[in-house]
Image 1 (cartoon, rainbow, N blue to C red):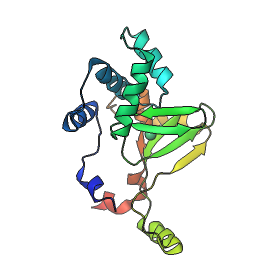
Image 2: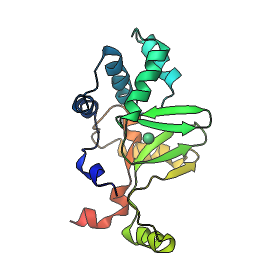
Image 3: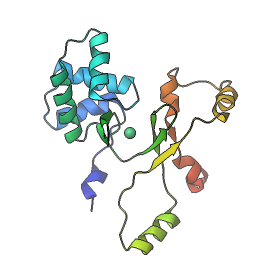
Image 4: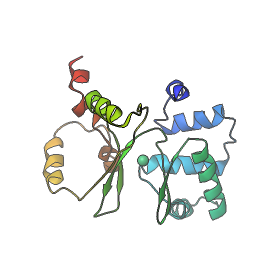
Length: 183
Ligand SMILES: [Zn+2]
């Protein structure tokens, strides 16, 4: 049972992440803050080497070991996400349950929030005899050619963010739960 997970507010911004560090009594060193800032600037899943390179390029003085240690500390406290891949660990800014769409063309991993229909969950539970409290889905696929025309279509609408990668992050729960829209 994960009762405590319900009580903890999910981290949805850099500010939330910084507040969680403070609440946990973690020291917010300049380096640790830089790493969190970078992870929230680049909504992607990055390896320690990539994070080190990006910080170095932007003039931040931080050693590779320090980057790695900070990432491990942040992920072990549940402030950032750590994905184990065969070629190493990747870190992302969302720490609570979410799903991934893995692009086999670009190796990009896009965070999505997927809410499965209750009937499907009930079916899985009755088939397995296990009460589901949490789930994460990995989708795999190739870049859709339709995506280009779709973005052109939406371009006439006012944009909430100019950051392309931000708009890549989509929420599928609205599409799946029609009741949520109706209520
Ligand atoms: Zn993720």
